[in-house]
Image (cartoon, rainbow, N blue to C red; front, side, top):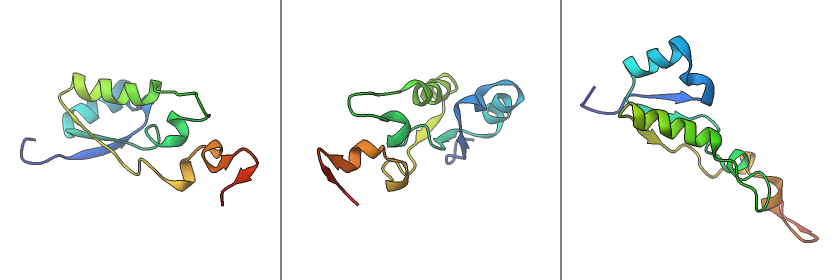
Length: 91
């Protein structure tokens, strides 16, 4: 698999059991389904949650794979706090 990346969309529990082995065998690029979108990573102002994104990157690095970003900034998965500023709400 050296000619071009062959990817799969993953969630953090994709790296368990038979599914992890299938990913190692058939793919060389990972794309997070939702774990790297702003809502899960930055759910509240001044609060971050990197655990799931880190699991994906750690698995990729341990297996010589690439990680691709997918819709990293999307209005449907951005924390509500991003659309408000004091008493002003953005639509």
